[in-house]
Length: 145
Image (cartoon, rainbow, N blue to C red; front, side, top):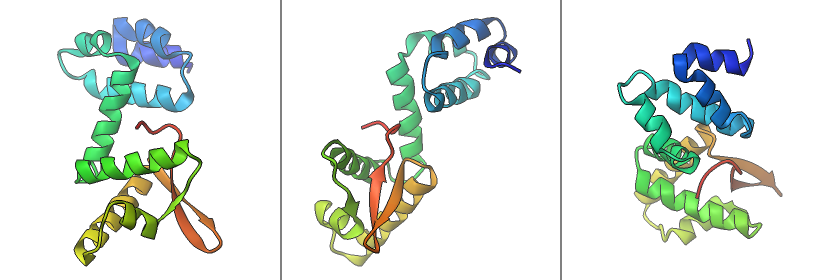
């Protein structure tokens, strides 16, 4: 089945509009948008949600939900901002550099950041790369911030 047919099947009479809006987007963006819309389509205000949110707003909704799923939106957002800054400046951060940048020193804070980093990796907003036997964290290019 083609994507257009799947959109019509999933979104009924709005399926063609959904397809037209996202047909030229990157595959990952299509998946994000369609997943958001599919979850929203069961509610009564689907058309309002679809037409009143820009593509950027839809991505923000998605990433906000992802960051909330870590259990600590604020800290996750700080980590993502740090890694985004690094990405812009072609820098990688190892875990100790992340602790230092976030001014962490207590064991409970460090364990909490380790849990956040693990969750962000699991939901594929960041990944680790290894250089010289040291793990570095990298924000994936499709992630906002």
